Amino acid sequence: MCRHLGWLGGQVTLSSLVLDPPYGLRVQSYAPRRQKHCLLNADGWGVGFFDSASQDGTPRRWRSPAPLWGDTSFDSVAPALRSNCVVAAVRSATVGMPIDVSATAPFTDGRWLLSHNGIVDRAVLPLSAKAESVCDSAILAAMIFERGLDALGDTIQEIGAADPKARLNILAANGSRLLATTWHDTLSILRRPDGVVLASEPYDNDSDWEDVPDHHLVEVTADRVTLTALDATEGP
Image 1 (cartoon, rainbow, N blue to C red):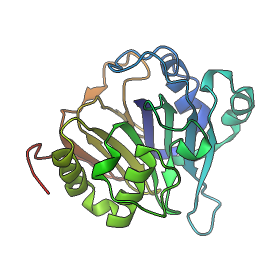
Image 2 (cartoon, helix red, strand yellow; image 1 turned 90 degrees about the vertical axis):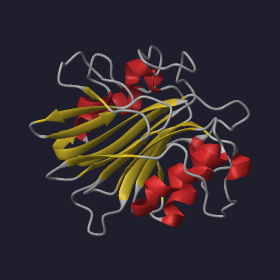
Image 3 (cartoon, helix red, strand yellow; image 1 turned 60 degrees about the horizontal axis):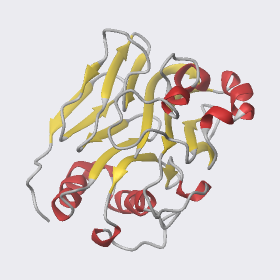
Image 4 (cartoon, rainbow, N blue to C red; image 1 turned 45 degrees about the horizontal axis):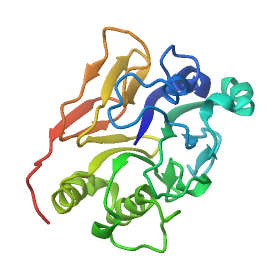
């Protein structure tokens, strides 16, 4: 189980999204308010963002297997890093999964950034040489990348039918689109004047946060936010 956050909008600092909010991901790493399945997210953290100066749109990542609350290097640099599109996460590793950088979200195929908040039986996932780790989230990410993000809703419905106990909250971004699913865990939207935040739980007490219903696909673009219901009973 994890907590994650995505941003699409104007240029903002990574610090303003991850570290500065009163209940942001740094606080959620040791005191999440809505997390149901564990108390700490101390098994690593990661942030990925799109650099406006990059000529090829390659996402940048900073990941660590250590708790976010103790990373003073990121704390000093985050106020200087700016982006219009960000995916960040703090991790609570599934029992039996490795705790190392390669198992820490966000994962990437070179174009998309992806985080998985949840758990899934690896037996229902196809093996992939492109997975960054043997952990369930990395294998799931490789499957989603191979099938394409336009098929995200169908992929999640198929996996959810194959593993009814799976929790499949996905958050993905490519610099101009932000996609997310709710599948047995929480997600909230904050529509700000300068952009949109998707987060496992609100990072402050702003009354404008909206909860996304379970079994939904969310798509954020520059001009709209779209919610689409997913069929929780659909089979492979």
